[in-house]
Image 1: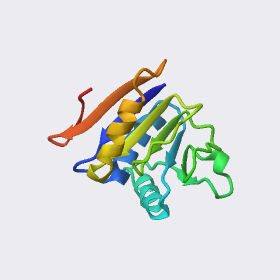
Image 2: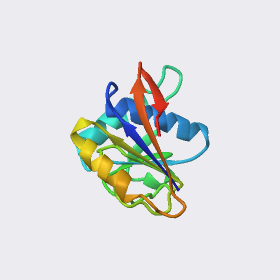
Image 3: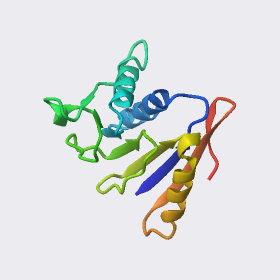
Image 4: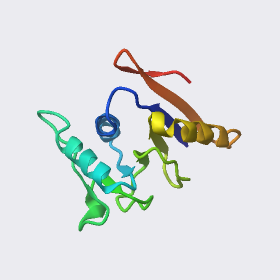
Length: 144
């Protein structure tokens, strides 16, 4: 399993989720976006629907009818009714994921200490590959 840590500095979380979601969709995979904040999930949903002038990233709430058919599912829990292989923790709170190929932890200054603690807690985890990304001059750069 891969765990990517993305430190937000310039772009809002919904823009970063849309960027990652587009890459996941381009690879033919499904995505679960987790946030305990309903307002944040709504903002992410709007950003996904408006992802590009000629494309949009279809999504829906896990509690809505037809959730299992959604390529991108928004939820407050890790229940991937859409059989997602990728999960984004948009609210900066890491949860122990099982059954996902790749996990993205998005965090800002307010959750930086928790993200550092999570990074350390994953030391020596068998079969785990960690990466750390941050924005530099408007581009996302892998720094670890």
